[in-house]
Length: 154
Image 1 (cartoon, rainbow, N blue to C red):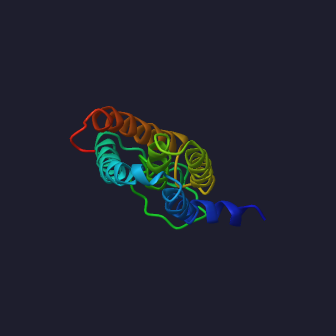
Image 2 (cartoon, rainbow, N blue to C red; image 1 turned 30 degrees about the horizontal axis):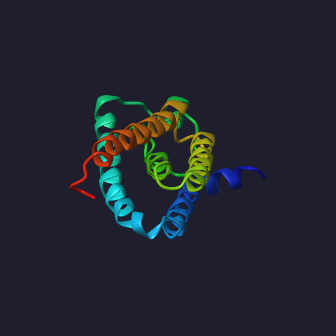
Image 3 (cartoon, rainbow, N blue to C red; image 1 turned 90 degrees about the horizontal axis):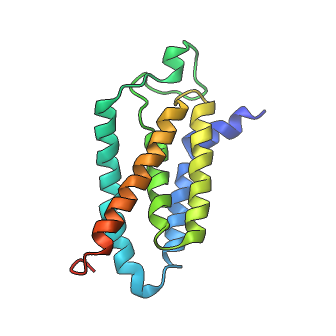
């Protein structure tokens, strides 16, 4: 009965974060939209590259490989570290902390639900999803420190 909810959360819920980002983009004051776009055009690839780097440094077999069970969703038996789904939603949520706290709250809620779902269906460990959130927040902080103080970009 509850499995379909987690399957949906693991496979499709991250899409909600994209819709929320689009919706809240229009809530950002018009004078900040250019800064918003540039910030996310820097943040998203940076988070992706950091995630790829982390994947090269640490190999964490997926839970269904270690536990030898069938996950609730079909997935390759590759390195599960970090979770790409949570990395994306976490990056959006972390970036929104600088533009719209309400949006950040809802995006973090989505990120947590996606993370829980990915663990429940058996394709990620807690470490995979937790590291994704840490990577996203760390990249957002670094970019805000660099970009936020660089007046030439604005």
